[in-house]
Amino acid sequence: MTIRLETSKRTGIRNVQGSDISAFHRRLYSEIHKSYSLAKARTDMSAVYNCHGLTFASRRTRIEDTQDILKILQDDRWEKIDNIKDVLPGDIVVYFSQEGEANHSGIIVGYEETLHLPIVCSKWNVGSEYVHSLAYCPEIYGPDKRFYRCRL
Amino acid sequence: MTKLSRKELIEIAHVLILANTPLSLLKGLRLSSAMKKFRTECSAQELHDYYDSVTARPGQSELTVALSYVVFIAFLLEHGTVSPLRVDPGRLHWGEYIQSYLTKADAHSQYSEIPKPSVPSLHVTSNASSGILLGADGLPIRRGMEHL
Image 1 (cartoon, chains in turn purple, orange):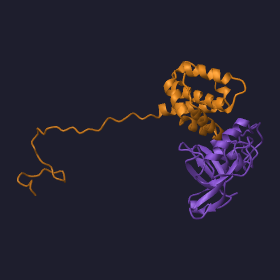
Image 2 (cartoon, chains in turn blue, purple):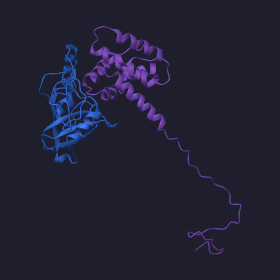
Image 3 (cartoon, helix red, strand yellow):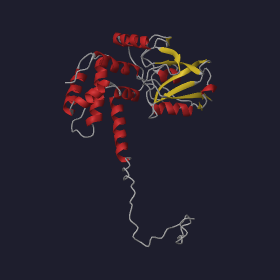
Image 4 (cartoon, chains in turn brown, yellow):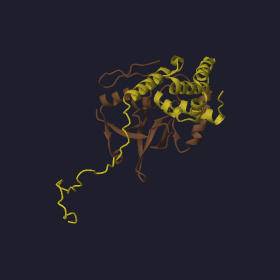
């Protein structure tokens, strides 16, 4: 199912809400929990929204296409932050692949002063929302991390 | 037929449930050891038949879906443009997206391929001419001044 979703300039954003979580999903995620024991799960699993849905659509749906993410970044005036030291809670991070695909995103919720690393809240597909340090997430996310602040 | 270990099956299932987008699924599965096996060990016909059988199973689990994606992508990568056989992308949620991406990527790589330049080589030829030596200014050096 899709919902009506638009940027601030009323550009339509394609989206889809996922369905239920199976028992098998839960079993697989319990293994992932163990592999990433330092990432703190803050919610139960949900198929309704994905990482981009958390970052850009208030947890209401899944956004799956990079072109839609780029459109949101542009229309909603998300300005790139070049220096990681300037990143603040409330900013966002978008993880891009080497081919330029936005394969993950999250919201900055804190800053690890000693290591100069942002702490991120992000959703791992149908899994939980996790609070984790910037690079402490599955390998298929990234490797290029870009930070943005909304200037609307 | 190719046999996958439990570890390999779990690996692809993890990729399936972690991938937020179709292309991150493609990227993750491409790197999996199951993909390597299917690409190297299976013919187009085998992949085609296996895809048909695995997607036809009722009540598919995440393992079956992950396996379907691996077989589908292996087929497209190895035989997509050359085999007369076709696999139905509509059976997978992100099938059409992935097929379209790979088709475009393949077309792009074909058309943007730059011909390899010939290996640079030095041709040393004997100077059968007058034997005039040229200085840094390009002018002939007069005999007897070579040592300067």
